[in-house]
Length: 275
Ligand SMILES: Cc1cc2nc3c(=O)[nH]c(=O)nc-3n(C[C@H](O)[C@H](O)[C@H](O)COP(=O)(O)OP(=O)(O)OC[C@H]3O[C@@H](n4cnc5c(N)ncnc54)[C@H](O)[C@@H]3O)c2cc1C
Image (cartoon, rainbow, N blue to C red; front, side):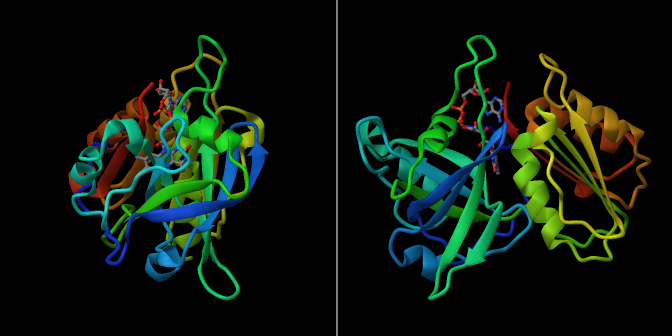
């Protein structure tokens, strides 16, 4: 599972429960992303899910090969991992982390949740690599996954200067959620690296927002192009840097921000995946 490097200030959802969700529809929104839209498979998600915006994220449980359903750990986010690893590995399936790109109320109750999956491939073979990416690509209406809301992580304390959000494509759904949730007088810079020019999409923005896109050259280290743009930004000690994506991007942004004089408390970073 992806290594999480720093996650001390998360806002945890009070009522979240591991539960099943079903696929409503899927869409290949651009070369690198397939969007899967989920709703609760019964009323548990409707009763317990509270949209928080920003970079709210979920544990996504996928069925073991040959099984229709993943086996879920009972209960909420606290201690879920030891309960999950206590389940027979033959039947429990896999778990991965994904962002709530958007959550829309459904007429009559409940939520429709968008998850944007990066369709990543093995550089050696060009084949889709990863159980979650392959699941998303093959998903069809009615398919069932498990979800467990984990809450949000972005700037849980007020930001006095500007926010600088630095991501690769795995963090684009988080950047979108953050851009949509920020108060409109907050100064923010979004630096987003993607693999294809067509992966770029309009981010919700207002007068005090700047969005800078970098398109990665084939074969380049993921995150290098975003880090180059970050190094062009003038950082002040009151600013806040949030960096998620490939491990080298998350660590490189943290190093740069702290070298520019930001205290640790104003730098949040997370390794979303490792090359
Ligand atoms: C809090 C959080 C939120 C996240 N939100 C999202 C999200 O909304 N959308 C999203 O797509 N990802 C998101 N991620 C990243 C996602 O969890 C990982 O990319 C995950 O490894 C994908 O699982 P997989 O089964 O497809 O691949 P895995 O089985 O985990 O990995 C298989 C191979 O693919 C490589 N790989 C994994 N991810 C990528 C990638 N993005 N690009 C290129 N190669 C990769 C690995 O290095 C490995 O070699 C998030 C991660 C965290 C921690």
